[in-house]
Image (cartoon, rainbow, N blue to C red; front, side):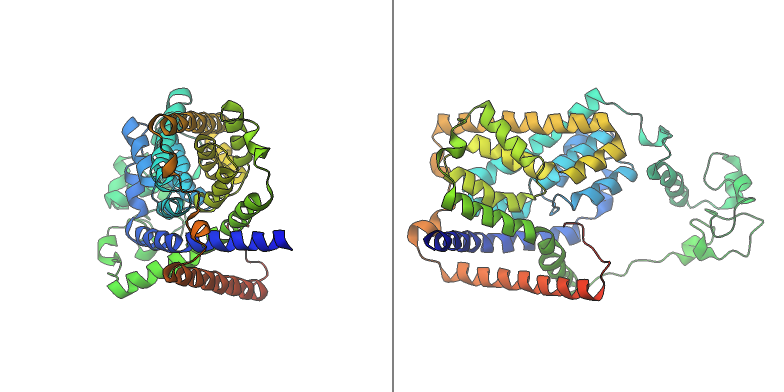
Length: 416
């Protein structure tokens, strides 16, 4: 019973220490979700230039998307015209870090990891994108004929962007508004209609001549509505996505601190073998950046080097079975191989650099190890209140999920 009591105490302290920072991260993540449009991402990621790869890494780093949430976002970007290098860069940086994981890293791991982690994520993302650019080059998206959804959607988008009618498209046989195609297509499936279908409703046409008069303008949302949407996303969708793995991570961290012998991981030292072990542990795990943080606390508490822990923090969230399957399907097996090699090699190299910096500049004191509450054996009122709020939100989401499952047996979520 003593071990179980110690396990519960360690779990409770880790949960309490992370609660205020997690709530802060969720709030910032919700604000970013409402104010950063997807069109902005698509605009800056359409080429294979180094600038596009760098933009993809910088745009993805603060976004509040977990390992599963980044998959549909990346597919949407790819099919909207993003290049393979830019998509890979986005896929690496987005799950490796985020505004919520940075705040939790500061609370549990100290200022060193709060600074190094996002910088390392951006560097590894740019490196991965460059590897794909150099070793797996591709033709521009609009010149490929792969039969994918992206190729089918591009002409329609171009047609609608120009606002041309079917009457003017006869001069461009390759256009989506080709009058020859219009004669054989039905009114419901035709892009623009033709002169032979004047009675087709304008609402069924993507770019009829009367479209400007029928164009619907999105209403301007009030501040109260924006605040409500931020709250609903941050405490609903986003918190639901990370809750299960966050609790698993806290439980594993508490178990590591309670039962794992100090020499279990340190027997491999701080060199290449230890970092490879961390990569092997992290790659198959379906875990987000925030949930991986408490597990890292457990690894540090038994003596693993900061560099080896950084390998786990980078490789774990960036790779999982679902992401690898998506890359193979959308971009090919060669891109998948380059993606895995880049993530592993970049994380190990950055781990070596971190160990060197810690040793050279004596930065051990910058690693907190989540020990503030353990050392003082007391919890401030703010931390206690935040932990109660966070636990209440998790319980509310869990209850709503059970109600949905009982009411709609076939419904499922992205993260199991």
